[in-house]
Length: 325
Ligand code: ACO
Image: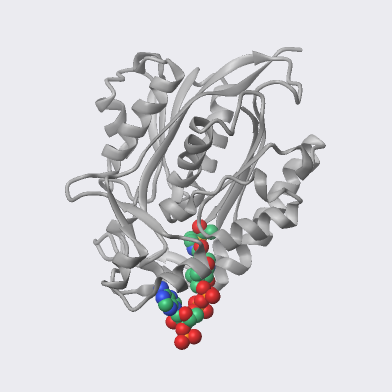
């Protein structure tokens, strides 16, 4: 029986020009290259220029994905931007992107699930495409975390970077087989009891300021590996696949130690893990499509490969998407 399946048609990304190395951060806070590399695996991150906004990053990444897909903006009827650092409280950054890409039909909205934003967006768009609400979507993760970092707090400012990544997805008729292309399964979770372990201490309704990121790093670390492994196991149970069936594991790029531990727990071989955290830092909702773009463009991820995406972030929110590229 024929069903609708959401297939990725193209991917693109954008990084701001300025690169901040660990050596640059040593001049700002009391830290060292050794500490940052040993605890996180991060060597460098990008930072948006003054006057360069989340929507600018998103438009660059969106255009790159459209070009890679060979799709004209006029063929997109849904734009979703996953971001925790929108240009404005409202309207959504997605409407800004929609206008700048010249798209005048369909609909656009932002998704806010912090570092899990891209996985939330992809799973939600998958459901909307299958329901017939749209046919072809541009799904973007875009962040300027440099704007909400406390640059005097060494426990957080060394971890994050700015950037954007995007995919073009479309609904196609499929026999629904595991061997067919597209999103096979997804699972989203949250547990708001942990909302104060990774949060921003400002907002329109509370302080009327954007605020700064605050985090209990050890608590986040403790929950991350367990939560991520659990949600991936759900997808394995649903599809009958195992870690050995995964061609490429493309996790949220927060921390090398979290990624290594999750891969080990799931039996995914280290040479199947796409790692970009060393060059990008944690770019929150942008990190997965940024990593995907790197691995597709350098020839690692190929058509027909089985790809597992996963992320966890503030809330806590977490989730995973399993797809055949
Ligand atoms: N440079 C040098 N020393 C530092 C720095 C720094 N940048 N930051 C903290 N320290 C010091 C601390 O002050 C502490 O010193 P003390 O022992 O004298 O008090 C010492 O290093 C150890 O600090 P911890 O916080 O215990 O270090 P830990 O080993 O837990 O590593 C880290 C911290 C890297 C943040 C870790 O907890 C972690 O990776 N957590 C996950 C956080 C994360 O990835 N968040 C991203 C968002 S959520 C997500 O995307 C999954």
